[in-house]
Image (cartoon, rainbow, N blue to C red; front, side, top):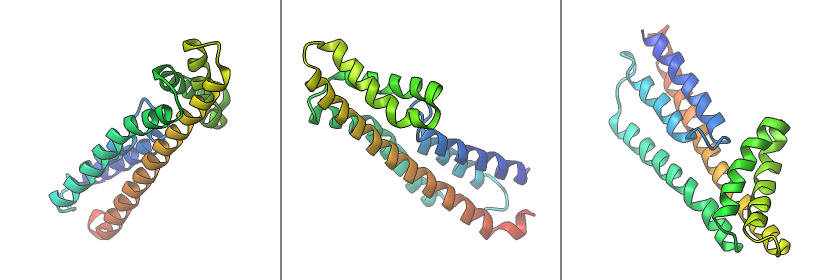
Length: 166
């Protein structure tokens, strides 16, 4: 059973890394669930302080993921249309452009969203799209770094108890 928990936890940590790029998956929270499952293995002692601190970090990043893009958009004069367009653009960009869609999709979506709001001012829409894009990149970067840190912690913990697991 411990080996199954280790494998499931590792898969969740990998999904968390993927989720740091996709807005439909909460990346760090998914990675944290992988850490939690690892600590349910009988061989690995449950460290509630470690789990509490990592949960706090995951929740903080999850909250910031909503604040940072909004802040970037508002800082550059954007509206909710730009933020929504950025998220939709990411999904469409990933579907049709693959990895390049991560970069092109949010920017194009924010620009189109701002043009829908006010089609007369394309320079304002471009500026807001740039702000939304920067906010999206900052949020994605933070989620990615935290998810990578969680998988490193996961691998270190498995490595520490490798002899007892296998």
